Image: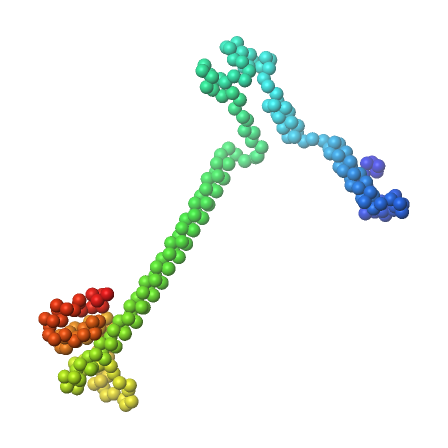
Length: 256
């Protein structure tokens, strides 16, 4: 019916009604809100309840009410001495309240909830494994960076020790009137002004086959044997016996 239909508050009819100058605006708005709420309540009362809603209301009503003597099971319990509110069992160690009903409202099959729970746990475990693998990868990358950084530092230190050994070898050889080094790389090579001949190039290629650590080991051994000199001690000893008895060792690690 047209009278039961909800009024349009944006229509001209509603705007024009009751707009007397003496009526405050707040009052008019409050009256409109109250009228709207009453209309909603009327619509809610007139709405027919669904079958599921009616079943739920009946079920809740039955569950809230206590069992009476008309219930055959309860009557049998009373004949055996049971009293209302008493726990079950001979010693009263049983349950007091009935086992609650677990109403299944969805349309999914049996075991569906367990399957969803298991899949959720699997996704969570996979996520944890990914986080663990990512953490391990980050830690491994950090370890590799530290190793490379340490190796680079050790290489720079060995290069400095090699140059120090070359300068010492050149100075000590010249003090003994040795004009030509035993190996070309035993001395610090001067800056090239002219092109070297083929023989010098071959020697250079041969010496470049050795690593910095190998060159350092060979040159320090030569200094100890030939001049009784240790670059890490910075001392020239009198003889091999004096060197062996007073020098900690033939490597930088022995002197640390």
